[in-house]
Image (cartoon, rainbow, N blue to C red; front, side, top):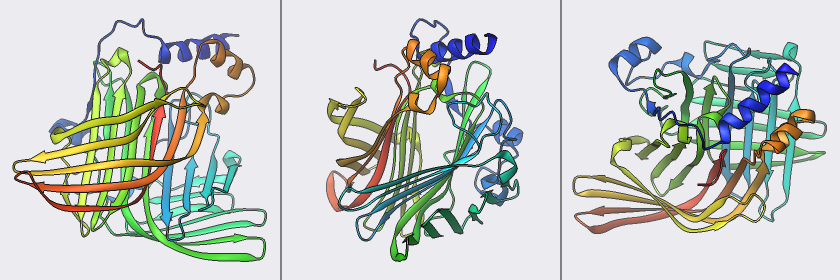
Length: 377
């Protein structure tokens, strides 16, 4: 009973609006932050993409990959130490695979393994779950996922160097009590993907992305919602996010922005970014507000870059409560938890202005998401 009451308290704490503590959230970027975290402000070490938690209670972690393929398919593969909805639980590793084909047909797999079948290096990205693996050295990655007659093999070759927003650590609380960390290990890369179903194998190519996340408390306690996206547009590589903290942390906004051209990072100062949502409507399934156009504008002197995500299709729309089972599912529902995760595809447009004059206008297909943990405000 005590565990059930604690769970209920956590769910309520993450979603109520009556908390009066106005402590804030911040991205760690002070010299003492880098010293404490043993990080180089400019260079990313190989160990940073290795396992950053111990997998025990009070932690979660995942390694993420997505790609947009030349035939119009998209693929998303994630290796988890446990559900990010249950960081207080023991190690419970699993992998997920989501492939969406051009006609809308999808393949979805959840692949749980026992703790004994999980292994991850702290020296580099080298994660194993039974016969499946996610491994790489910051430049070249290999991912293998198989289940019955389905086999997916991915090769990801970095075209943009590893990058992180400042230290990559977002702290929450007056004394940095909690954290959510993020490392885009491959902001953009060249993908070769072999998809085997039964006796048929397809060889697909495209562009891809890999990042790595970890934290110490259920995210719905910290974050109300975020938009996140990555894309290729012409010669440009784009990584963007806009995080809104929960009310108890002052509803602090944490923008993230990275722009590279021809493999070289040219802009990443989040303080120069503005964020706009256009044509918002309530998603029929989740009841969350979804924008048909998400805009990031980066202004630096006489130069301005405008990144516009134009939604064409929602390829994934899931209620987070579905990840909570049994009595905990009932308690979460009783507490009014209605978090949702939505993933979109569409056209990503980049416009470049100099002295107010448009000098470039390029676009390509992209993938982005809306994670909505909290109540709509």
